[in-house]
Length: 448
Image (cartoon, rainbow, N blue to C red; front, side):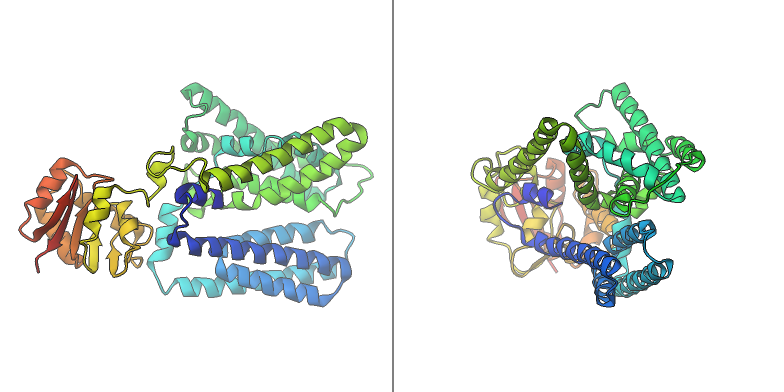
């Protein structure tokens, strides 16, 4: 997500994105801090670590309910696989962590209820599953190592955990086959088509999950030696990957934003790859060193690309780079000059120019990343604003919309120009006076 922010922002940090960075960054620090304290409590038996883990998890769940819940799932995986610890202590820790996450989520939801539209907006707009091909490309060299570690850990898991792991493997295998077949059939190799492929594959791949679960339940491992060190990481990796790519129920499951699991996949992938590299090094040191060196160089290259190109001078040219449509600060001179004539008040403008106007002192906008009407459902405002600027919309609707939302100014931009018929229709409205024109831009003030 932060890499995406870098693409959107370029070298100019966007004030709109400061809070999301804190929202995700602080929540992750607390979640992983909680897991670290839980592991310390399990190994040392010190209750202070368990209490600290619960406090951190409750705080994380309050800030970000979804990531708090995901961290709780990881904590349950850890406690489940610690077979060398007393059952009484594991149950007590599980109850403590459950109370902590429940308390944080309840308080967080009570606060969210103060703005009734925010839950509806989130559910209606963040309906995404993780795209498989980008994940495979981003973790390609890690995945040369991870399967071997999973193979070593499976026989050492408890029966139910092993069966669920095989179910995830069966599901992911079937999902990947169907996913690739869909992409090949439609010719979507590197040019998109990802959402449809996920919808096509998710429900059908459940057959693989059933087959994998049955296989795991019937396969008996003799002389099993528990592996409390990384068995829980395997469960974490397989379960989160399974959920992240899925759109079960013909897309119904997307309402729960399964893509968010992607944010917590990096750590288990890295842990399993590191453990596998250690085993491989004892047998084939050159191969292990080559893979690790490649991974490190990929990381250095990625960081350098972000620092020197996306947010640096080597790549970003306002309005001319490949991601110029993302860069809201790149506006034409005509827009820059005409916006200087904009007075204080509520401004109706199409997105993304509305995000530029929202940053001006004294102005609020109806729709965009920094809308002044966040109490309204996102989809409702989006539909209303897009209809206002639609060339087929009549002026009767436009008049009603201006009155309903107490609009002071209407702005048609030059950078992201509206349809000529739209501009002509707005110009003909008796309720609006023309303040100025520049290029394809026009600024109107509402007559009250």
